[in-house]
Length: 257
Image (cartoon, rainbow, N blue to C red):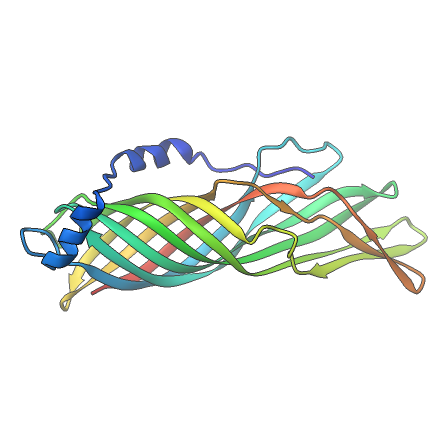
């Protein structure tokens, strides 16, 4: 099975990460104790949620007998965050997010020497804990601009693999199906994150609009098997798992207290 082209994320991601400064634990503790004294902003927290546009990305060359038409999984994300100031502009941001990832694929393949198109969906839901560095580029204005960069840990809390299709040789039509969990896929996922955001004060709070991009560090072996009926029985046709990485665009609205 072919894998899918990714987005050119490494250069801008590394550029954003290069702007981040991680303070020693003593500085964070001093900030928490000061509660915003000494010129530092106070510790703050908030809520955010919005849309996720997930896809799978890989680098292994595809077998030429396959053709793939790939689509994103459109869903939702939501969670909480805590901002710990380190300097006037740099902060550490700890989050807990629920993110729905996955992809949709139409795969053209020859089965029993008969061309067929299979509809495949991968649904993977994660509870993610990103630890990010936050840089505030503008302060004291009606609209503030900030950037984020860091790493996250994901725990898979739900998954589903579905496949459907027909093999029609002109005399007989054979349905192909699969519907199961993906317990064989690692439940942990580690990813790199970067993003940008805008904030504006409203009624003593700060409303935010944020764009984020996640890219997994390791490939996950996603299933490709199908169940084929033979009379009263069903035979499973196994194929090698395809190694793909999660990637996800997120556009979120939030409020910071």
